[in-house]
Length: 174
Image 1: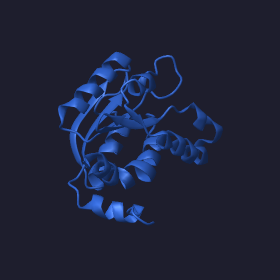
Image 2: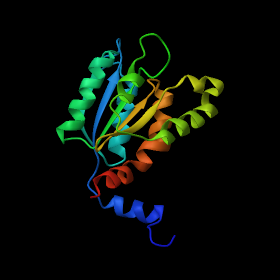
Image 3: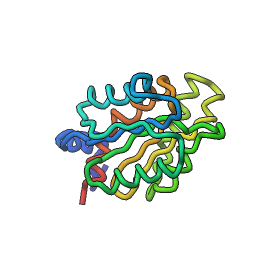
Image 4: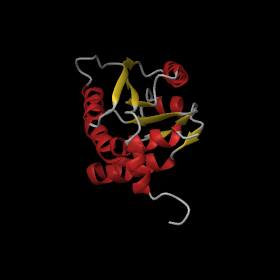
């Protein structure tokens, strides 16, 4: 590629960047810290990937609360990324998509598209029920994943952890 760095060169530069500072929000009306297996999996994968967990919280599936917390964290200057799990389906109480999509200043359509493609291999046509979404809230990455541990594992292993350092490096460039 003339005039621009290849993806590999970008990743190499990103690896010299400090670890990502990440907030994890589990969206659930029923989970507790003891029963939040998906939130635990996200935290485990982040730490194994060399990133820093700076905030963890369980929020009820109330779009106004989700929106307020995401905006508060994004504006705090203490996090590079916010990862949510839960509330991305089509059940009447699932409001994460609406809350997250309302605060994104740049959408990363590829996150949801690729997540659903990868999910197809796991759950078939049911993958269309996922409203996983990713993007930027100003200069903070935000990814909303389904609440199932299998879905979280796919998103973390195949999409988020492999690219998080690169993404944070990209948004930190002047």
